[in-house]
Length: 318
Ligand code: DHB
Image (cartoon, rainbow, N blue to C red; front, side, top):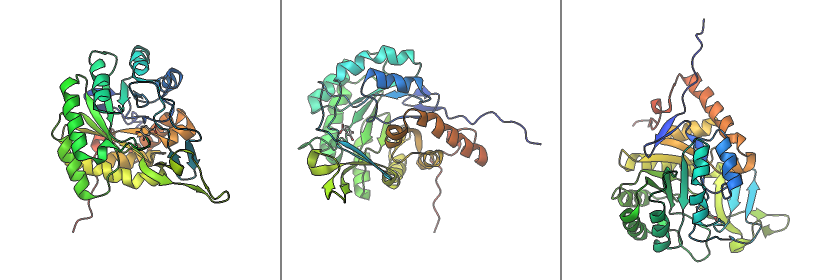
């Protein structure tokens, strides 16, 4: 006779903050306005993460700037957002949803970043800051995350002013020495978490009938998300899980559209998961669905908490 078991727990701790469930939204889709943030707040997401904020309001790049394919998405949004104050002012409303509120910060230079981070110092309704080192969509602006010295300098300045837990959103890396160089930078600072990965920058999707690119900005170049991002995301989660100091949480994002994708990210070392392309496609119901699917897998495998398999990916041996 089978004994009924309680549901496997998806609770987790990121940056010392307790999340009832480890699945929430990626910064990017559907998190730029109060209405959108409220939808996440009312959903089964474990936290509310804002669109990357700049110091001032930005219109973003010309439309169309997002396109969905059968295997994922391409975007070149150009950081459309309401400006930093809007997201700081939303904090009490986020708190009313009873889940942690994380603000993504993506300043256009050192000073913008430190101004925003300093202004958040005493905001008791903000649980943490995700500093974006990896927006690939601003014409003429390189990503900080691909310039290790620039990243180090930025983090030096940021850690002079930050009071809240702070983590970084990283671009994908593809070369082992680059993982090590970035890990070396990050291990010099008391970062709380690393979110891996941002979209795979500057891909190209083509409409063959029209013989044309599918998004307007940057001659059609844009960040790739969805299914094709998953192997790169898993590799980045895995590498940074093994290279960063033990007290740094890894947040996995890239190609998670079902419970098995979530399971794979956790096996690689993710302590929490963000959903981007699939959230855009499915809306906020994706959080409960993926959570239920992950719990089914855990039940079948006999796991009662994510810590029992987090980071436990096995090698094949010699
Ligand atoms: C945008 C895209 C990103 O990948 C990011 O990290 C921040 C902003 C954008 O184009 O809006």
